[in-house]
Image: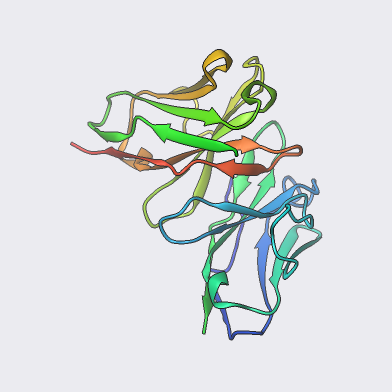
Length: 110
Length: 118
């Protein structure tokens, strides 16, 4: 149950696009199309942004999109806005009824 | 609307026990698997445990296996986490979360802080 690998931080200017990677193994990200992404503002609970790799829950902006290639999943945020500044976590089902999170990425909107 | 409210956190000495509760409302609690996820202060999220909708199946992260026990009372719309033999490294915010249709967490509580310290 090793954590998925995410960059510690990414940054972008308002209006730009950024991508956060999430690298796992053939036992988790690579085996299942079950990666989800969560946004967490300071002092707040995580919020679901993407599930099943690329699906958006109702109410989540279409500026958020997800994809996967091999053992790496990605979250792309287009048209960056100030309110997007937060921590982002990926999570993958890892088989045998276990889940694994990434270490988290701090997004700074410059 | 869906609401999850955790309680039971506090300061506890190493080796002691604590039980967390998660009160659910706004949805059919007995129809959903429920999870506990924790977050050490300033650190990332860590999945802890899951219980199936009917309470028949439960699974744990290796880091808590044998020490923590997840349970639920569907009649009370409540999820529990019994934490025994607590260690300093168990210090964290503990969130309960509802599992969506396919292996994701669609609603989260606000968390309750557990501090293990002498």
